[in-house]
Image (tube, rainbow, N blue to C red; front, side, top):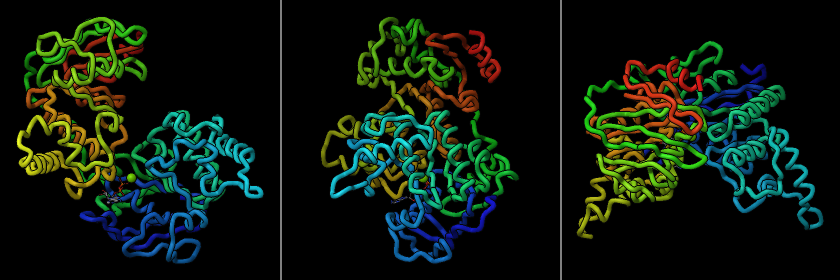
Length: 497
Ligand code: ADP
Ligand code: MG
């Protein structure tokens, strides 16, 4: 635990939103110089508790004791002035302003009524350097990569010299090197006595940097552990309320005829002469290191990029796939980690996201549309266990795992026969992962096929019936028997190149 005294105590906090109890009698505390990690499935209530702390939401009941006093009326600005800063899970910058302007938003340096750009830029450069980032502060936020944007948010939170910094999934979009920089910064902050609340799904990160871990489930605080006394299994059991013996459900289907075959597919300078096939009832895994070309091949199969050579066959017939629409016509659906890119419209409701692209296909009579659409949406919500207060609820407010289930529901309604999934569970908690594995399973059981790319070996091995291995744009190996698929075997193919 942090060596310091208690910095913050949240007592018996309750908070409800329409249709959900987000927090049910949660008591939580933080010490000086402590990293207190919060874990729990998506929707467990972690972000809500933090938004109550930072003044975004007001609790329905319960007290917050900070610096020896009960905090009464408060808002974000006030909490920031009290030394409580947050790195939000959702990035919240102004895209057309520069990095420096974003960092100084609401606290601009003004001399005699004029903005002091030079001083702000210098200070901004220093703040960026403090978190190990080398970026020109005059660049526009929107010109940065997502990982850089996230690092700017981190630099911003730290620049307030706060006593408490909340980090809500700070590493979900940054590179390994940036993660290391962040961890160095966290160590410095700890040494200065700053209390840090750290939310992440990444078990290894949590165990490495935290002093205590608190686990949430369904709005309740389940348990708090000392990080050096707990192991991963105990945390998982606390998170999902059961043991994960059946993470990868067994299937017993004989694969049927070939559904998709790609033959000698080439995109010049990107990948070359790639061939493989997937049959009905089968999950084909595509293994390889980052940059092996897996995503690039799948983008061509889905019509997002053009291929220069080779053929794609669907159900034995050559399919000319030049646009995403061609892919959909051929029953090929893509789910990638960027859920927004595959037609998830965040401000729209769950219902509309599920049914929008199907309306004219299913419903000929306008009068029937609404009722039918409601029925269809409710059915999907139920079957996919989408946690939402209702079909009209905006997808934006759902957790990552539940958004991913909406995407799955959508492509299933699109009547895709072949699903290509690129990192289908990245950034999703264990419980939702298991549900998604189950859905994949149901999908292939119905005689359809799935191609999955994953950088998580246990996931790839657990899901796949067969594996192909790619390396530097080429197919370098195949494992055709389920029982032969092991991590060693896959790495052997990658390494001997
Ligand atoms: P976590 O951060 O642990 O994933 P959240 O705190 O974001 O979970 O969500 C807890 C519950 O509260 C979820 O069911 C979520 O849908 C709901 N929720 C969160 N924010 C809002 C909001 N602004 N309006 C309505 N419901 C919300
Ligand atoms: Mg959250």
